Image 1 (cartoon, rainbow, N blue to C red):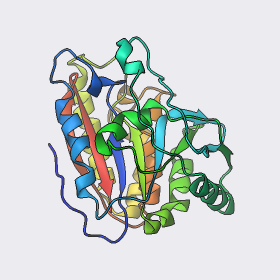
Image 2: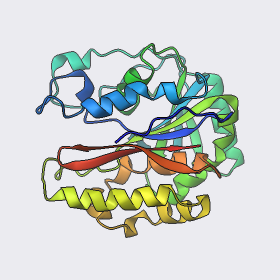
Image 3: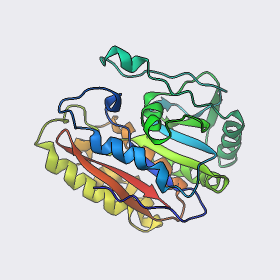
Image 4: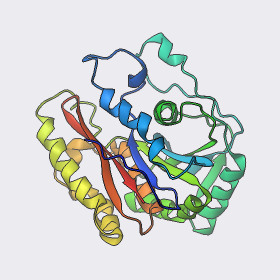
Amino acid sequence: MSKLTGNSSTRMPTWFIPHGGGPCFFMDWNPPDAWNQMGDFLSNLAATLPRTPKAIVMASAHWLEPHFAITSGVQPELIYDYYGFPPHTYELKYPAPGAPGLADQIVKTLTAAGVANAADAQRGFDHGMFIPLKLIFPLAEIPVVQLSLHNSLDPARHLDAGRALQALRDQDVLIIGSGMSFHNMRAYGNPRYGPVSDAFDDWLTRAVQSSPHERNRLLTNWEQAPGARQCHPPRAEEHLIPLMTVAGAAGNDSGRKVFSDRVMETTLSAFCFG
């Protein structure tokens, strides 16, 4: 299921996207077509924007710190943080520039909002960033700043951080959360988890599509959703938490599901706000 439409808003939307399994879009998989629909969805996402972003802020599931950290290097290197994949996948390139000025603005904005944070000039771009962006913006020309998760994985904390950054959207900055709406490594490929993932996905969709106040309340209490901890085991919900950051950055804008597919016996979805 895909509901891609153009965005006529003057403001950049915010996205929560699935980034797949490791470098899945750039290698053979069994079954061969497992990631095709998701790859097609990501490849067509840029066409839904009102214009080309001036910069991207990417909250990735693959970076946790005891405070919110922000990449501030001029040309961050890639971090191939996946294991056991074909050799060529460790040679993938995505030479997007960093954005030190934007990183400094984010540091100041979060600090003014009382959100503990720090710039990190040494941190590179992890695969939660470069794998999906290779499909969405293949030319790698748009500057990118990565934003870490807070290692508390507290949903309210991430909603607050996103809320503090929402004005960036008026500067043509695209805010993306990169994760997975279902992420239980032991459950992928197990048909018993299909109905569990469906129930959680239905709940998550209703939460995202609720009024902003109710949406934030529901997302803060996401553990109460049906099958929540079967879909995201305790202390392993880092793939869901980027959704909270982009929902916070959505402010009062509405949210909707824009993609859903059955992959490895589970339902995986994407959401857009604004």
